[in-house]
Image (cartoon, rainbow, N blue to C red; front, side):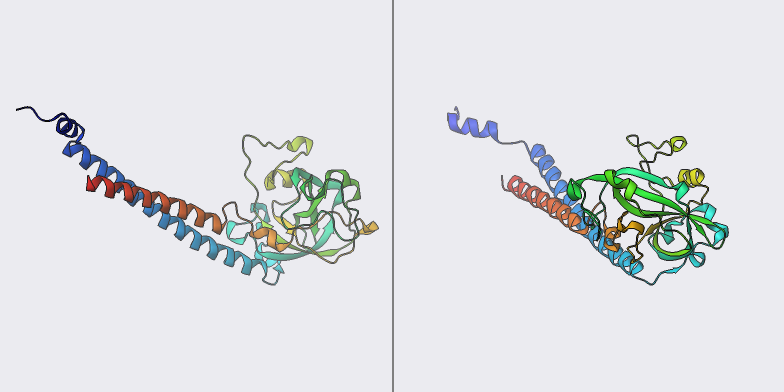
Length: 268
């Protein structure tokens, strides 16, 4: 006896048991894996929030003498990772003859297009410029590199040059890692990224780098350049806490979709 044509079609379309098991296993496995990734991103967000709080407390602590954090005898080794972002102060004299320009770079996050008393440059906050790196000859006999701030390309001749002994308040930073798209030319004193060792060799300094914080020290001539970074700019991360939350939601959505697919396969 022949089966009706509709029954034969249904029997033909009915998946084999092993196919159903394989599909269910696959969808449920993906659902479990993406759920785990969602939870992991939530943990990463908590870790990042704790890191932001820790760095914020470090940045707003009272500055310590540089010699207490990085003694003169240890400055040849640069800034240790555990000392990065600590506030320090150091007395000395700027050696403007050894000044370096690093960049080009956009204006740092959190700064205006022009400092008080300075003429706003054409192009606004989106324009590019240079970071001004000047050695500070410390009173203890050593020398450190000070990133004094950012200046637009067409305002380099307006960079102030404080003279005499002064006290610099800054944030300790390690060097930056280069990549295949950015190269420094130390021989020509052209620097695209912060290579503390090469800059130290070029200026007769140590590879200890301070990013000067905003101060009320007057600038000769009233030009106001360069612009120091506000402390808030050091709280910028490549991946922000809210980004981890977006990642977590994305993985959770995918997990829910895979769970739904698993349920559909089980019902058939």
